[in-house]
Image (cartoon, rainbow, N blue to C red; front, top):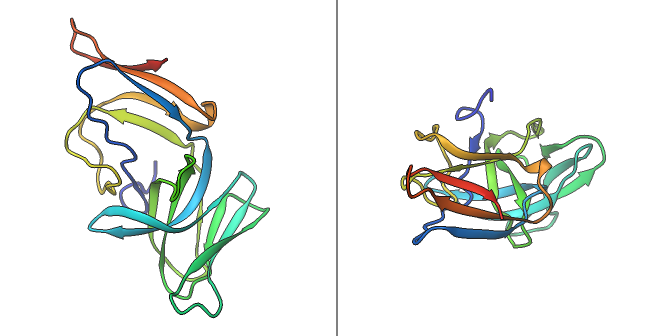
Length: 181
């Protein structure tokens, strides 16, 4: 994807330590996308200050709430594009996340320093990819590619709202797999 690790950065969503295998991963709800205004410290997403559900054909604006002493911000949805516009007079971090039923929503893609009146237009296929590695922690902003091959990849738009998966290691080959449970 053009610009990855330069213009935008993926985020480690989940880190799963599993022993013994196999392990079931269930009730993964990932298919509703959101724009988020994440707080990042030391290349880790700490939380999201504000967020909004977004659908294809919509756009949203990030604004400062009038009369707010704490500089709180909010998103306003407009029916145009899958786009977020920074209407805060200072550069802002805007992320893409998904509604997993919790608050704040997990951030999975980060765009740093989006200037006043500039926008983030999401024109991508949201993909969930699984790797076997001990080098990363949950919510870490990835500044470069993961150096191990992925074991599983799915288009989030093709998954049902809630899914269950089986994570296992083949005792003969030593290979890991993820299959629908």
